[in-house]
Length: 483
Image 1 (cartoon, rainbow, N blue to C red):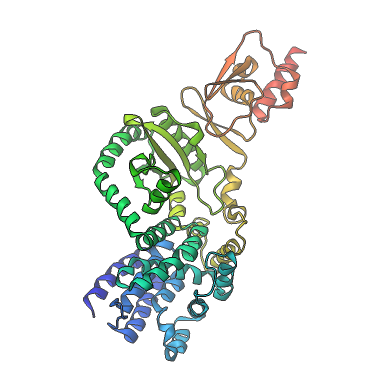
Image 2 (cartoon, rainbow, N blue to C red):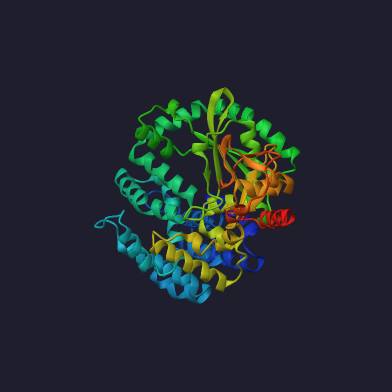
């Protein structure tokens, strides 16, 4: 066996061992033996070995997208389908599901892209209709990512055609499916071949400033790490540099130089939280971060209460770090991070899905997302989590203690949450440093202090605007005592 194939295969099998059920692993090995028996060390004109390409596509399908065994096998066999004499063998040996994916890929390949408007939504719908099974689209995205990673070996004309297809068709599809990092890498690679000067300019400046960023990050994270450890959180912190394409676009739209792009990187806090504690844990960390560093409230983004339409969940804050440098910090749990990494495929995993019927439901959902760009996937794919959190908000006391209240809660509800005597004497307060009335409705992340006066007593009309059971019961009790 070719040395390169052997090396790639060894890494692929390690990933299979960690991610594929033991009972299915012989099927993967059987699929490799099948494809290697047909192509052996055969290469394309570019010099790339066909079997090596197939293994790398299968690895992306499994490790970076997170699909199951049928999709992985289809990825391994996707070049076999051009050899008509082997199609029946594939059907008999690997089953209808694998054959269906391969047939869909063949139909898409036959569509061609020379005479269509690639960026049109109609073309994507046509592609989906031809594919039949949504897994076809996902395997095609994996195939395209592998091709883009090896585009150096192609002629200039081929590079131009493939990078144009990718930027107009495959990158938007990846983004639509929540495959943010695949979308980001695809667009970086498109920039590399469509505008090499821009790509190289940004890449060089990133390399030159790498040590400076690393020193800044180390200084920034140290006090936060110490506080999170004291609070007993299990977490990881890391910095993630923006993609080259994203930095370049920002330089163009804002008409600034590289050194003037303030958010070159983001700090990410990834919490190991139980599902029921996710939201409160994220808000606690938010409180710790904004206590340590001054925050810009206008740049705060809450995608935990209401995730983005493709399922992305995270709490983003922009804070003033060392040397008066603004830094974006992203707070999320391990589950949220995996969904951001692997998109919709991770939703199925975290819904506790097992077996083909659950996978079929998930794939039907994905199909609906692709067919209807205006559809919010949270409505039906992530409702299990939204139902847990839809009726709650999380706010903070002046000391930074987290309190959970019903959605729609007012300052007065918060006062009663602290203590019934504080509620009875409440005359107003401050939310995020601003004076507010008793009726002021609270939002996630608000930092609240309550003002009291000895002369204050509960009023009947308070019952018209408080929402928590605790506040209502205490007000009624106090009014009855006065009768």
